Length: 124
Image (cartoon, rainbow, N blue to C red):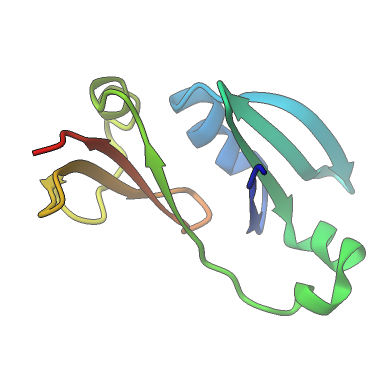
Protein backbone atom coordinates (compact mmCIF):
# COMPACT_ATOMS: atom_id res chain seq x y z
CA UNK A 1 0.00 0.00 0.00
CA UNK A 2 1.12 3.53 -0.72
CA UNK A 3 -0.50 6.81 0.33
CA UNK A 4 0.13 9.99 -1.61
CA UNK A 5 -1.10 13.36 -0.42
CA UNK A 6 -2.93 15.60 -2.90
CA UNK A 7 -2.95 19.20 -1.73
CA UNK A 8 -5.58 21.46 -3.30
CA UNK A 9 -4.22 24.95 -3.90
CA UNK A 10 -5.38 28.18 -5.52
CA UNK A 11 -2.32 28.25 -7.79
CA UNK A 12 0.40 25.65 -8.23
CA UNK A 13 3.18 27.90 -9.47
CA UNK A 14 3.82 29.72 -6.14
CA UNK A 15 4.05 26.34 -4.40
CA UNK A 16 6.76 25.03 -6.73
CA UNK A 17 9.39 27.38 -5.29
CA UNK A 18 8.70 25.87 -1.85
CA UNK A 19 8.58 22.20 -2.84
CA UNK A 20 11.01 22.08 -5.80
CA UNK A 21 13.50 24.89 -5.29
CA UNK A 22 13.74 24.84 -1.50
CA UNK A 23 13.05 21.20 -0.64
CA UNK A 24 14.44 19.45 -3.71
CA UNK A 25 11.35 17.67 -5.01
CA UNK A 26 11.31 16.91 -8.74
CA UNK A 27 8.29 17.70 -10.90
CA UNK A 28 7.60 14.39 -12.69
CA UNK A 29 4.14 15.11 -14.08
CA UNK A 30 2.54 18.38 -15.14
CA UNK A 31 -0.95 19.00 -16.50
CA UNK A 32 -1.81 22.47 -17.85
CA UNK A 33 -5.06 24.17 -16.87
CA UNK A 34 -5.89 27.40 -18.67
CA UNK A 35 -2.92 29.77 -18.46
CA UNK A 36 -1.27 27.88 -15.60
CA UNK A 37 -0.86 24.43 -14.17
CA UNK A 38 -3.82 22.36 -13.03
CA UNK A 39 -2.00 19.40 -11.57
CA UNK A 40 1.54 18.26 -10.79
CA UNK A 41 3.17 15.23 -9.23
CA UNK A 42 6.32 15.89 -7.24
CA UNK A 43 8.78 13.23 -6.06
CA UNK A 44 11.79 13.09 -3.80
CA UNK A 45 13.14 9.64 -3.05
CA UNK A 46 10.17 7.50 -1.99
CA UNK A 47 8.05 10.55 -1.15
CA UNK A 48 5.37 11.61 -3.61
CA UNK A 49 3.12 14.66 -3.43
CA UNK A 50 0.40 15.87 -5.76
CA UNK A 51 -0.69 19.50 -6.08
CA UNK A 52 -4.00 20.25 -7.81
CA UNK A 53 -5.53 23.65 -8.44
CA UNK A 54 -9.07 24.35 -7.28
CA UNK A 55 -10.00 25.00 -10.94
CA UNK A 56 -8.74 21.56 -11.89
CA UNK A 57 -10.59 19.92 -8.98
CA UNK A 58 -13.80 21.62 -10.14
CA UNK A 59 -13.46 19.91 -13.52
CA UNK A 60 -12.20 16.62 -12.14
CA UNK A 61 -14.30 15.89 -9.03
CA UNK A 62 -16.92 18.65 -8.96
CA UNK A 63 -18.69 17.55 -5.73
CA UNK A 64 -15.59 18.30 -3.64
CA UNK A 65 -14.54 21.49 -5.43
CA UNK A 66 -16.65 23.86 -3.29
CA UNK A 67 -15.16 22.59 -0.01
CA UNK A 68 -12.36 24.55 1.63
CA UNK A 69 -9.22 22.62 2.44
CA UNK A 70 -6.29 23.03 4.72
CA UNK A 71 -4.07 20.07 5.28
CA UNK A 72 -1.22 19.18 7.57
CA UNK A 73 1.63 16.94 6.49
CA UNK A 74 4.01 15.27 8.94
CA UNK A 75 7.25 14.39 7.16
CA UNK A 76 9.87 12.30 8.93
CA UNK A 77 13.42 13.06 7.81
CA UNK A 78 16.84 11.61 8.65
CA UNK A 79 18.36 15.02 9.35
CA UNK A 80 16.86 18.46 9.98
CA UNK A 81 20.02 20.37 8.95
CA UNK A 82 19.25 20.42 5.20
CA UNK A 83 15.59 21.24 5.93
CA UNK A 84 16.61 24.10 8.21
CA UNK A 85 18.88 25.45 5.47
CA UNK A 86 16.24 25.03 2.74
CA UNK A 87 13.60 26.83 4.81
CA UNK A 88 15.78 29.78 5.81
CA UNK A 89 13.54 32.86 5.69
CA UNK A 90 10.28 30.88 5.74
CA UNK A 91 8.24 31.90 8.82
CA UNK A 92 7.88 29.18 11.44
CA UNK A 93 4.43 28.26 12.79
CA UNK A 94 6.05 27.72 16.19
CA UNK A 95 9.73 27.95 17.21
CA UNK A 96 11.76 24.84 16.36
CA UNK A 97 11.12 22.39 19.15
CA UNK A 98 11.72 19.01 20.73
CA UNK A 99 8.52 17.15 21.57
CA UNK A 100 7.78 14.96 24.59
CA UNK A 101 7.93 11.92 22.24
CA UNK A 102 11.52 12.67 21.23
CA UNK A 103 11.09 14.38 17.87
CA UNK A 104 12.86 17.55 16.84
CA UNK A 105 10.43 19.49 14.64
CA UNK A 106 10.37 22.40 12.24
CA UNK A 107 6.81 23.48 11.37
CA UNK A 108 5.99 25.91 8.54
CA UNK A 109 3.18 26.73 6.14
CA UNK A 110 3.56 26.23 2.40
CA UNK A 111 2.48 29.08 0.08
CA UNK A 112 -1.05 27.62 -0.02
CA UNK A 113 -1.36 27.74 3.78
CA UNK A 114 -0.97 24.02 4.47
CA UNK A 115 0.94 23.14 7.64
CA UNK A 116 4.10 21.16 6.92
CA UNK A 117 5.92 19.55 9.86
CA UNK A 118 9.40 18.15 9.35
CA UNK A 119 10.46 15.81 12.14
CA UNK A 120 13.60 13.97 13.12
CA UNK A 121 12.97 11.33 15.77
CA UNK A 122 15.88 11.20 18.18
CA UNK A 123 14.58 8.28 20.22
CA UNK A 124 15.12 10.11 23.51
